[in-house]
Image 1 (tube, rainbow, N blue to C red):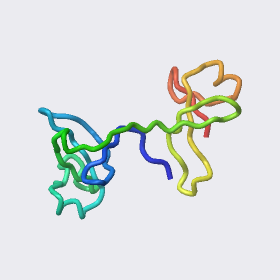
Image 2 (image 1 turned 180 degrees about the vertical axis):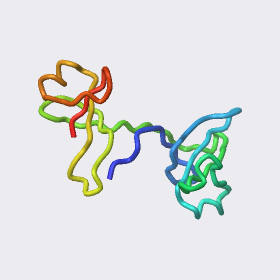
Image 3 (image 1 turned 135 degrees about the vertical axis):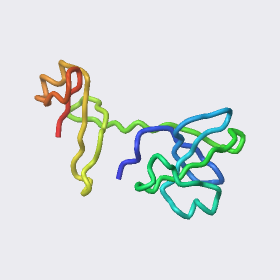
Length: 116
């Protein structure tokens, strides 16, 4: 299972996704309802998806890092967009027209090509 691309932080020894910054505080998200007991609140923008948010001081963050899922396919590096539920297939893409033509990718939109 791939982790979503994005920024992540360690807060209280737990990994959370970082989604923004406001007034010197960082906004972290959780998908675990148990975090409601740790000061998180239901994100009103995504109430049906079980997204919980919390603003914390930067000083409370012990580490931060970014994730960008990539793979090598036929000797070329690609961005991984998503993975099948079984984990045996990936949707990958490139903006490189030469690679797209050589490997017979489908055009997703102008300037973006993908292989399923």
